[in-house]
Length: 410
Image 1 (tube, rainbow, N blue to C red):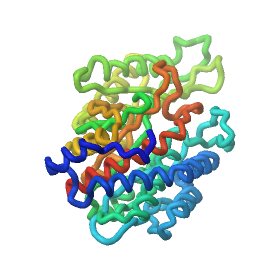
Image 2 (cartoon, rainbow, N blue to C red):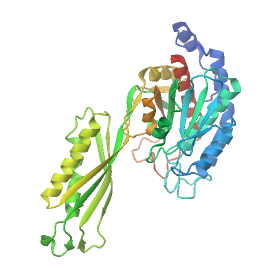
Image 3 (cartoon, rainbow, N blue to C red):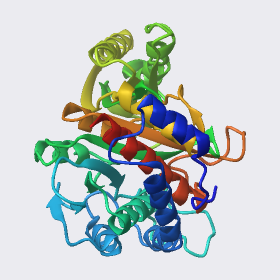
């Protein structure tokens, strides 16, 4: 969609009559803002390519932050959470915070584009798109002028613990924010669709590590051993009951084991076997319940095999709740822009953006990327995941809708 296109029309007039247009804005100003974003898109796409070709993993984002700050051209800003940066656009007063993530993943890229990363690190979660879109809207805001300032938050360590968002919150730099807005590409939504869902939209995600101790020995004499591998395999299968049989399916849960480690030779039964996984729920009160269920299943399964089982659970991201009023207002702005809007999408993905809701209203929008309905098409964290360059403009438009929704409430 061409951001230069003026498509507010009669919708904006109706909204003005209903009093839903923010007092800080009018139709001509919004059209001017959107046209300014469009002007910034070619440079923003070029920035996206540079960031994509030269990514940095969590905790090592200094170079990425410097490149984005340089592109913003609004001063050096303030360091936050180690490698992160805060850059203010506009005057004084409580800002609307627009957040984008700096880090990439240790994934070997398989896209084959000329600007692919070749270092074994890849922007496989769309963070390069988010950063470029943030630069586009912030530069546009600086050009046209904004009464309510924007605080560009370049957040580190979204992909790993310790959480960059949690550290930003702890620093106290967002205590006067009107709202925090995030926009994320989402391959589980069709291209051209943007979701603005009220309430829980991402799950709480905790990680667990299972250790099962047995009695090792020769593979030819299993009767004189206590096999921790067999016990662990049974425990992994039984853990699927956490989601399918121990939680109300209306509420839902996801329990996935992603790493299993045991042994050093095929003819030796080891003394210890370990596994690591993730447990995800959509209600905060279910996190402790899920952890207790995992401990029960592991300990009893291990005991049934003559072994001892232990579980360590590390609490990571809370449930991400979108502020209902923000979600509703953003959905109306997106509709006014001519965007197909979804208000029911939820995902068992997780995002440390959830921590911002501890100190401010917050809204996470999801911008669809899917052009292939196949469930096997590359998704987030895949070496072939590559959103089209047009997503830079669509994410920027999402940021604008979130900004207007926050200003409207202020």
